[in-house]
Amino acid sequence: DQQVKQNSPSLSVQEGRISILNCDYTNSMFDYFLWYKKYPAEGPTFLISISSIKDKNEDGRFTVFLNKSAKHLSLHIVPSQPGDSAVYFCAASANGVGTYKYIFGTGTRLKVLA
Amino acid sequence: GAGVSQSPRYKVAKRGQDVALRCDPISGHVSLFWYQQALGQGPEFLTYFQNEAQLDKSGLPSDRFFAERPEGSVSTLKIQRTQQEDSAVYLCASSLDASGVLGETQYFGPGTRLLVL
Image (cartoon, rainbow over all chains, first blue to last red; front, side, top):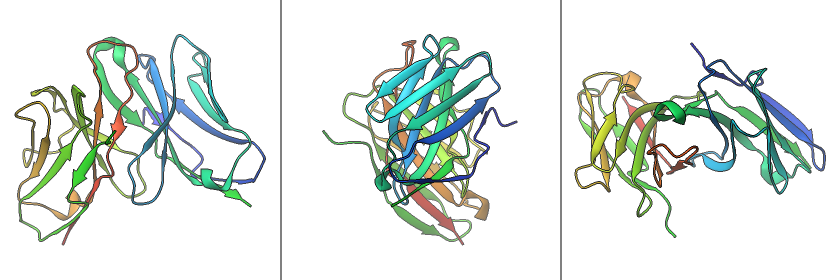
């Protein structure tokens, strides 16, 4: 039972354009969501997060949108840069019920073309 | 400051051998997590410590897996009688606290890549 789904295994975007990565979840108890970026042979690096009391969080070129009714979140990167090429994982947790573990999606490989 | 460190970075074991993987969390971080990441998958939760207390070990796949954090800092994940299906990247993460605060970010180490032959 995949509680967090990233249905696009890969995405290619031209440099300077917008990258949109999507994530869907099924567990309505999730109240904290994060995006991590992962380069080969490295651990996941925290990118941006959002709690369920918000619908948008922005940090520089990165914006995360949360649509609770649709159980959907997305990461927007604008403008995309070649250094953004990596695997992006979304993760969710249900802190409010004392379950602090993260549930991860399977990742989306982003390739930004110069 | 220093991030989460893990050692060894790579480990090759013969089937049946025992292995021990070490995690040094960020100084002062109360919570520590272990995850297992198979090829092409996202990390999957194994176990969680708050200080020295192991509060959740629901993700450990079998009783061959054992984790400890005796002094509330460094943690060791031990796998006994390794099997080929144990081959994966083992990730450690720490967070400042997870005692009910809404949204505590976990910071990950580089992982230990385990290959069981």
